[in-house]
Image 1: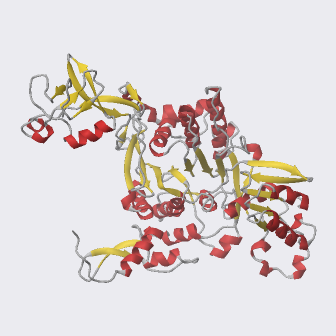
Image 2 (image 1 turned 90 degrees about the vertical axis):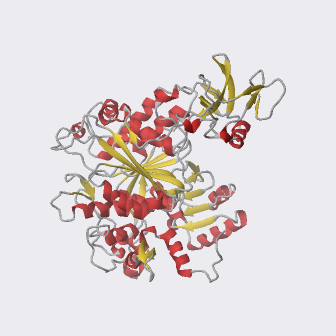
Image 3 (image 1 turned 30 degrees about the vertical axis):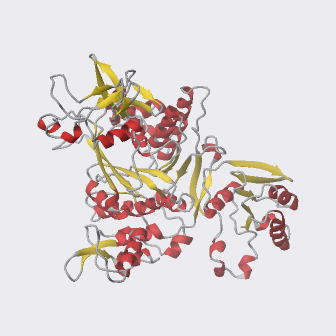
Length: 638
């Protein structure tokens, strides 16, 4: 029984708990007047979270407070005036597929996805550049104010990249890498479902620091654990001391209380043990007599676990109640020693009620079995040969693309097993360091194996390949091109091996990050006078298409970018229908005939442009007409 508090609520403590839910990275530990450690607030970090400019505070240093940490928070929170432009010619089954491939900087992509996929992603896989001293890492641009972030969206070098080589002689060697990761992880957390997982691949170069920043972003209490994956059993022979043979998979939950791994068996050899099945699935039998050695499993040591179990003559009915013509069975082993059952009678009754107990003859006597369902303890040391990177990563990719294109791709089967333990058949997976496209390949392969409908979102920067590389010679000018081609070929290969009666989504919708479709006047009209406005026919950029506008509207309205799209010609104009009546868009001439036609399906949202209407007063007439025919429709004009 807990004591009565006999005082009013501690509002400070309550407010700190509220802040913990919103800004877990701003919560630290401090000591109260009595010297006890209590939760506290890092007010410098909190001020940065609530500020659009860089907040000056105590001097930063390389620990968890590395040089650039506040700037990375600013980079994560700063708005951008960008959009996603559809690219039909590089897509597969553009209108119907539920998979996305986003080409561009993943920090921008994570920002653009915040409204559309907030709390919707079940598993996020992150395989960032390892901080090995030669790796290329994403370089955030911290020099601009938030206003410049919003207006001047081109923040890349002359090649269109935001990559730099992070050499060990750099004074901010660790800090630059941490800043790059921290800003992205902060945005990642918002996209996860409450029962979702994030899995981070890493070698030993930054694993300690990665754990520390993940503890901040996701909360140390949500750390699931660290898996060691043997991916190169022979070890790296170029190393002076230890030949590294493993990498790590660091796993966190969004909310550990709500998250759980799937009951699966990753070791195919173990599957052969599950030779029995019932309505609940496959299982193996385990003798219900306690197996422990020594005196601790005897009747004398645990008398409460010694009791008779009664079994009908046909072995179909089992009970703890003594019944006529039932066999009486005790936990006695072959040498006559009186042992014990595995559980107390109460637990046995519960198992028996749930049909998890059965009986059979073995060597002329009745044996009581517990059904052990098809599952496996997920261990922290993964050693299957299918995880070896060369044979099941590099060779798989080389064979698929018929040339050497990518260094050190992950094992396809490692990725499949990570999916098996974390996602179910209809879940959404995000990989924003897509690389060669292993995650997308694994999602499609697993769907083919178990009739699933998992969806993926992959993001990859169009990082240029070396002109001397085999990839460049094979026609792949960027890493993104390799990734897209792999997904195309993997999809075709999977379909060829698929039963004709099965349907499978092996398509993907390519969207490319670009500056906004809108001219600067749309965002800063106060900077333009009437003489300048007279020369502007539209505030939409001239090189943008109707589909470009459609996807920016979907972004702005928070509509999932993977929803099916249907195009129709109505009264001579092209009209887009997104997921039936979720959104209807017409950027051609918008007539009353078009209005009357689309109003029949009672659309939730309708969008058009100022240029699509003939007279200014028509905008008001259109809105009033919708109020009559479809009063719940939200109407907007660009």
